Image (cartoon, rainbow, N blue to C red; front, top):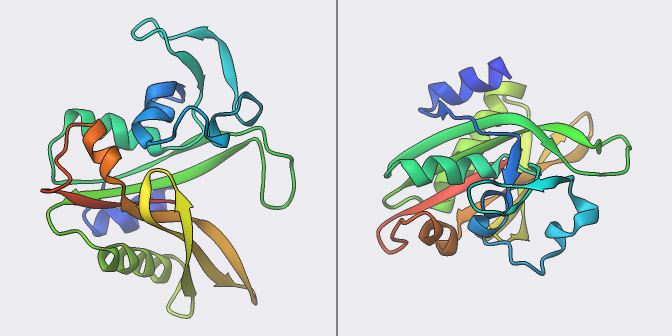
Length: 192
């Protein structure tokens, strides 16, 4: 984690943090995840038996560090250039790539004229800084409610491709949810 912070700190990102117990607004709604989306299924989350005192929303253990993005954007005007590293919780079946609690690194850059080329450049620089110049990464089209367009990020390691996470351009609905004008600002996000 310290090494990731150091690498991305050299790229101009600052570290942000947020609570591990979240409300539905920060974990889903502000991230453009509608009420009927499968990611909100109670069987795919660790809901708590209490509600938020502020908005009476059900509480849950955060399922992604994307919640930190929302909390930062609610308080800060662009430009925003942050990373959030922390534990996330999903009731996944345990196998070689899944566990109910794991660590995620989330990155967010919002400013004027941010493009997909900027996102790809940052992720390539991160991969080569951490794993060396021999690492290869690829981007496959995907879908996430909070980014459009969206990509899956794979890294070639020990003779096989491994999915490292998702990324994409911040969806205009997410920018609107925090009061940013999507005609003025654009951004990218990644979760590894």
